[in-house]
Length: 136
Length: 136
Image 1 (cartoon, rainbow over the protein chains, first blue to last red):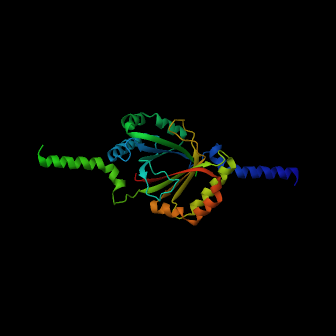
Image 2 (cartoon, rainbow over the protein chains, first blue to last red):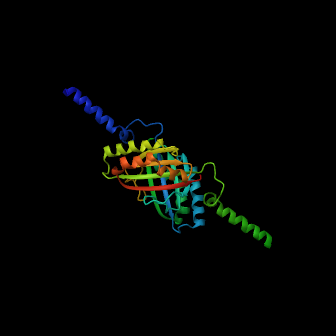
């Protein structure tokens, strides 16, 4: 293999290997479908309490009025087959769709979100949040 | 308050209080928008390893061929503001949309899923799964 073609081969190989990750880790070009999903799991302070869950659902619905929130899905554990890796112990889950991380950050400090935490925060025990940058 | 109107008041109050939960906890009528979201978080055995992450993305893409999978989103941690409740330590995340829990169960035992686990399972360290029944 000539030095020139070896270099070309290596460059191509590195580009191919890095491509799937580079798209959403380092690319400056934002794909049309790119979005940020904010997924929150709530364990009630009084686990399984029907009234508390209804109240928290009521509170979560108010968050739809925040302009940065493109979409909000509210739900509970699904009755899928039990497996060791599945955590179905949470009481409620909210999933929000944002255009980007900055919009999620703006949502966190929005007055409607602050009012939600103030009014419904006492219902919450453990809270776990995952923010996911989705490319595809 | 007359006994009659008091009873009516109580019935109405109970119905209103229970409504938000009853819809997806006890209703036999399935709303048009009801779906099951299967959200999986992967921590690589070699955390942050770019090649391993690219390989796992490659494997996850094969799962789109499984008929029950309506939609599959693949991504990584978003660069949102750090907060105590946010877990951004995972390497990869897949989010799948199913019509119902039975479809998710069928997906788990589909040969393409079995082949994925066989070929790419060695890359995975910790795996956490949440299955969420979404009503709204």
